Image (cartoon, rainbow over all chains, first blue to last red; front, top):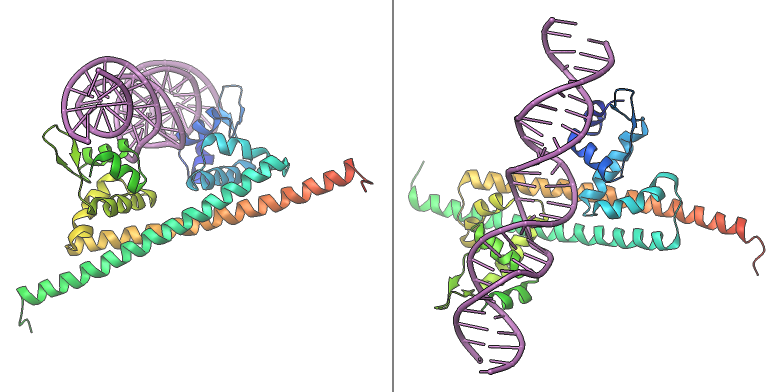
Length: 126
Length: 126
DNA sequence: TTGCTCCTCACGTCACGTGAGGTGGC
DNA sequence: TTGCTCCTCACGTCACGTGAGGTGGC
């Protein structure tokens, strides 16, 4: 498939796909005219790359993990890195939970404030 | 307190604090010599800013939310934005959970692979 | 032939990192 | 006076966005 097709099917931009190639994360074949050609597996790979970026990994970190992710080959050192990244993701989830509950409390405080304001400005609004 | 103190106590870089000021998120006073002076409340504010950045909000979005967060004042429109951001954070948490479980399954596959490799290369290792 | 997609530069953006070069308070 | 911290440019980085200008397949 072509780069536009992959972009549409994986939900990332064409520019992002070219960037992944530049970083060695996803290297497609080329048509005689020089156009990129991707296999079906690329869709899944792109989604994994996105997930890992979203989890805060750098392109360098993802590049190191890719061989393991693709064919299940890993050294003990790589496994340790994977475990470390997994722990970092768990930490990020906790952080987000905290940010979220903080936003929620801000919202309820603001809502209460808004209602009391209304009480003041419109004391007898039947 | 000075910028270095705030950096140490809030766990962000001095550069980040100056950047927040540039964006209007946290504007300190100035000493006669032109040095930044922060109040005690700044520690909490910085941590909130960090949480919101971590949750994927832009400095512009955070800037709009700050008055509400600081003194609890919000318009209905602002409350809607807060709710939208809260929903986005919830979505991000789900995404991270997915990425995490995917990493975990990659790890267990690799671990199994590693052990069977060991079986091959060292068949009778007592 | 007309579009639509593709290509490669290459500069812009966002949230900072990182010196460069200099001044001020304890 | 000696450090340590502070200051303001200003360029670098990472993961792309966004045209600029041109070529190729249906």
